[in-house]
Image 1 (tube, rainbow, N blue to C red):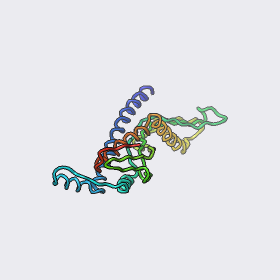
Image 2 (image 1 turned 45 degrees about the vertical axis):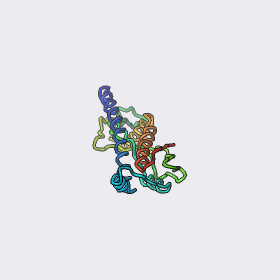
Image 3 (image 1 turned 120 degrees about the vertical axis):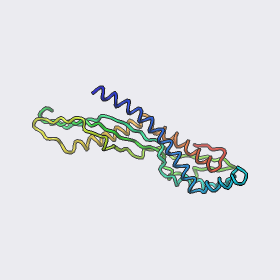
Image 4 (image 1 turned 180 degrees about the vertical axis):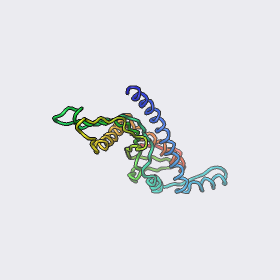
Length: 216
């Protein structure tokens, strides 16, 4: 069991690092595609290159707010983890070996975090002479989910006079989601999500032609 937990911890560390990098790359790629398609930036850049290699873009505050809001739920971090979760039901009068029910579940799950840009308000965006200042919404956890294909029952111990409780595994899965969320929070997933979001928004605004960007 100790060896299993050590292997699980090492896998968790590698998955955590990979999830951070993948989340950041996907976020930047998504923003680049949306800016190119929805704001006409691709056409403007081609026109600028044809006119001498420099693009001058005049983007007003309502346009910037609209473009950012269209990104909606910007996922910037995916935290993946393997964890062993236990659950049991006991009898008030009989010992566990007679009437107990205990289950160990090897859980593989992920927690996705980011910022909901649909909550951005017009007052959060300031535009002046090629400079942009943005106050981003707070980072939040969007979803915690368990990969059912990679989650397995490790062991199940049932007392001599009892039958397996059909609800026990469901209860353990709910507890697993809670523990995954708590572990992600303790490891600083919200700070990472906010940091990746700042990097993404700077790239977006620079793509819109702003030479100076401040994220508040």
